[in-house]
Image (cartoon, rainbow, N blue to C red):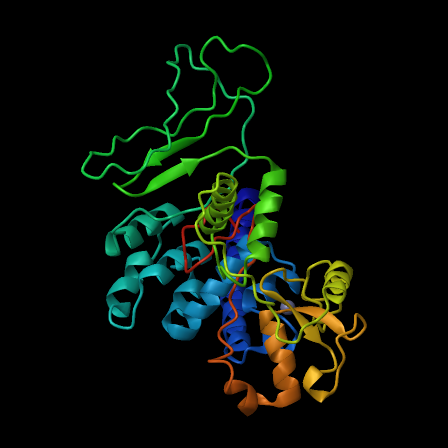
Amino acid sequence: MTIARQSAAQLADLFQRERVAMADFLLALAEFDRHRLWLELGYSSLFHFLHRDLGMSKGAAFYRKTAAELVQKFPEVVEPLRDGRLCITTVIELAKVITAENREDVLPRFFHRSKCEAKAVSAALAPEEAPARRQVVTRLRLEEPRPSAVQPVEPLRLVPGESGSVAESRPPVSVSAPWPAPAPAPAPQRDSAEPLTAELRRLHITVSSRFLEKLAAATAALSHTHPGGNAEEILEAGLDLLLERQAKRMGLVKQPREKARPSAPEHVPARVRRAVWKRDGGRCQWPLESGGVCGSTLRVELDHIHPQALGGQSTVGNMRLLCRMHNDLAARRVFGEGWMDRFTQSAGRGSELELPFGAPPAVPRGPLPALPLGT
Ligand SMILES: [Zn+2]
């Protein structure tokens, strides 16, 4: 046997072991998730556990979380994963379309497919009625190859949807400057809106990383009133505020807004709120079993370490920030499940992902959107 053939045989063996290991990992992960053991370790979701405890990238964690959930619902995917008919990227596409009714017919259609082919299969099985709303952060290539003859691209204007008009499809506005380019400095970026339907537009804007940080901070700050809010919702809320302020200046607002009610019934002094917020950095302080704290910035609330109902004071020393999920968990530990269930519908499957801004690869929000990244 030649050295090349020996090496190939060894590689084939290693590859097979990798698949088996992946299948075993997903089986174990599904079992771990079934018993919600991540909760016991202090994490708010399986995704959070994979990312924080096992140190996976957000993309890798998302793939494995989705696959583990699929394994729980459809155990028959494990064998194809083990023998290589399915791989982790095709599993993501399979998860979008498989149901209890179609499982026998649909599963084999994903065998031996590449990621792209699997996408085509899932799209054919479940064509989208409307273009997906998406939120993608990409890196900008500052130096674009200059085509020899480029017509300057007219920026599309943001106009209200003209119902009835045929939406003219144009390519996304190019960031390359009209030929000849004036200077090596990046050309001024134009915003563009691409018509998708009579009502929907896809907006392409170029922003700084500072902008994304602010957007992430605003998303966290509004996570109570706009839980799971996407960039559109958060930015629209901000624009509403701006417009309202402007209208007030112009004397256009007829009735002054109702005075804001104190948001917390416990009447924690503003001075204490500020100090606790500052000390905790706006992040959930729930201790993790592996050391460190939860650190979530979503739906963060003030919590009395020694509960107020048991005589705890609203002092800086007795207060901390907790995310909604951990605040709920803390209360359950003190007051018991039965008592707390009178106040909350259910603990829910804590699967809220943190916003990925500024941290590529991005993890999309919501159930199983297309993921433009590798593991
Ligand atoms: Zn937390």
